[in-house]
Amino acid sequence: MTLFHYRYIDPKGKKRAGLIEAESFNAAKEKLRTQKMIILHLEERGTSKKKPLLRKPKEVIAHGHLITFTQQLASLLVAGMPLYESLLCLEEQYRSESFHATILSLSEQIKKGTSLSSAMNQFPDSFNQLYCALIAAGESVGALDTTLGKLAILLSKQQKLKKQLTSSMIYPALLLSFSLFVCTILLTFVIPSLETLFEDRPINGFTSLVMGFSHFLTRQWSLYLPLLACFLAGCIYLCAAPRGKRMLHRLSLSTPLFKTLVTQTAMARFSRTMGTLLQGGVTIIQALQISKKTIRNPFLEDVIEDAEEKIIQGSLLSKELKKSNLIPSLVPRMLAIGEEGGSAPTMFHKIADLYEEEIEKTLTRVTTLAQPVILILMGGIVGLIMLAVLLPLTDVNSFL
View 1 (cartoon, rainbow, N blue to C red):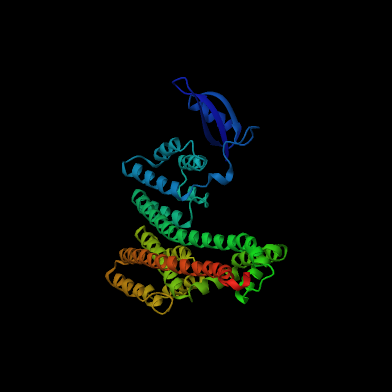
View 2: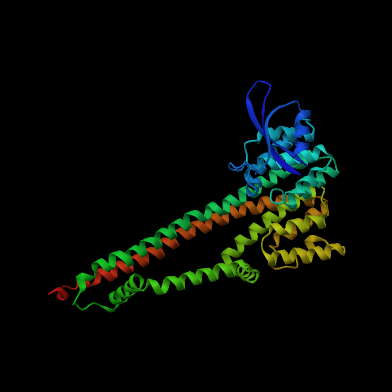
């Protein structure tokens, strides 16, 4: 299917523009003709010499827009509007957005009789496996409106968790960057400007050491900058490589404070996704296959994968999770209660709520601890640099 851009005159006599998906130019013209439009111009998207109306990379629906789109579609379906008309309504609303072509394609495919999950599967960058699996489950039981509502809540929870993790690290990062900037200014500008005060005068060893380091930074930059660039490039390459990522994940599970935060975040994502998928009608095996990808830690994913194999053989998920020392003991205990009472999906949501609250407390502790540590550390470095400058000034005999 090809996307065409057209300009037309609406019934009020105003010039407007739109997009239509068709197999060919003539097919697009015929579609517009059946809608009794006065067409001024029709062309395939991107063939104009002017800047293209839409570009492929920008057709991806961002997470924030996806939440709004899901909520609005759920509301329209709950109100009793058919799926095709609901998508047409949203297509008109989002005509000015870059991802309008995606929604237009969905409505066109629904009109032809394609299921919504199948249509969304063609846009994996916008609708991931979790999204499509829930939509497919909702369609199979005839509860698409309810499923979309649950999906919107899940996406909102995921976005909230992501914002918590990001915002909690912003202030310590800014504080550390500013402290490093101040130290660099002192070593490369302030100390070199004061060297004339100590010419031909004996100075102590500590001051000599600081001045020597300052000389290295200001005069040997052609030596250390390429080495620093190579080191950073090597670190980036190592972090991007599968083996390097695995090493970082292993390190995060070995560091006490980071282990707590990583584990809590993983369990919150996993439990929230599992609860939503199971409530949406997805089988436990399929739910595990999808949910383990939200953990984002290969060692914890291995635990879920091993449990998945045992569940196929007839075991319980709580029993298998209890065997791993990486999974907090609270998770299998609460899950076992849910499995015994036949309310595992609800228990997964309770586990997610619990760990989301714990994440907030952990992040507060981390940021509260990090700020004074950074201030003391960088304040101490700045103090030592200033002490190296002031010590020779206290020796009156060196100026006589």
